[in-house]
Length: 232
Image (cartoon, rainbow, N blue to C red):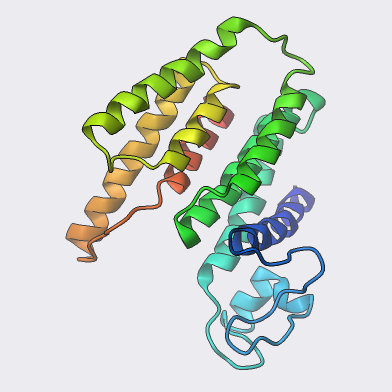
């Protein structure tokens, strides 16, 4: 189990690089990670979340400036996800598509958090690959399109009356998920995400007194997606 967790942390480190660099058109293959403040190239040791959190107190050991906590949290979260995925569903040929969808959604959660966008260069390629794996074990039927059409129609109506209710990227993500899921599961995801979003806004505004102007919704959708697909 420890192997799965640390493999997930390594995966999370790579996904974090994708989420941070692709939306701003930075190279993510050849250039090494560096400190956002002093721009010193980071060693392999500097990329280990536990080491940075415990021994460096989440600071760059070169300039001692604080490292954004989301780096370590995202890697630990991804490691936890890989472990839970292995325990609940398991890594099989028939579940690769679901793993890819979850990985894609986690990455898009970070792009939404950082830049308030659902990065198409991440969304479309991973969705396409997941769809290919999905149809290795599922035959195509015209009925499979009923859920995406319903989701599209529902949000077209919603945006008509609530133009700022949900972003276009969020809708695209939901439509892509609906290619793999039934309508009930999609509605559960929306319900979970909306409930979590409302709770978060309430806590932020009335408990911590920090009003939110714009809320990145993909992290809440992703949490709902993982709960609905892995647990239910």
